[in-house]
Image (cartoon, rainbow, N blue to C red; front, side, top):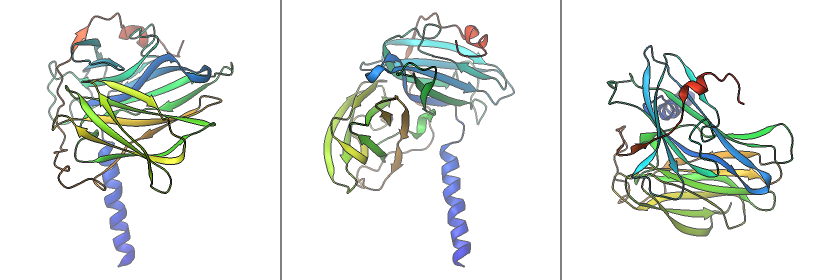
Length: 303
């Protein structure tokens, strides 16, 4: 009986994991870059989209620059992903993409439901990204970290706390924290940094602009700690996407830490937001760009 119950629990747990990773029609890529960094690093982002459908899929891609409200016009490109196509947008913020040298931000990508009916799974696709640095020591290699697309409806809302574990910030490693937002209003998130004993060693509120992105470096020494991130002010339907990046200070080798969400530690009064899948608000308007998808289709390897 005990073994049977254990198998049942395992199946339920695996089902829950798969649910969070199913394909969907709208994603947030919480971090993207084309900029020099600390200790000789130089960060770039590759974006990959895959269409599992038997029909072309029209999509919209927005770039949300860091540290500003993006409720007005934002750099945008609209295009079609061909049936079963894997579309690799190498260095998406680079000169053949959004041409945003020196900038960081987030990406929003979703099926264009103004051009195709999106009932059921008809508009589902996959979105992945990788942010990497050229070898700061002058070698030919790269050091990269994956930033998988986050299903738009599975971000951090008022019903949960996001936990970011295994954070280290000392002489050997540095930790950056960031938050992207798919909310057309200002949102305040609180970050509580805990040491390995669970003691809160730093607490700070961060204001995230509408459809915005912020990133900052820890200013407290910690080894193997955890950050708890939660919304303290904003609209009832606020949706944000927290993450952490732990970087080797010598080589620039980086690891992405995705938020693990839970109602544990959250008051019952705060756990009231409906987390059922729903289309996010999309009032963003396009800013003219020379972004050419055909140029990327012609590339077989990164330049």
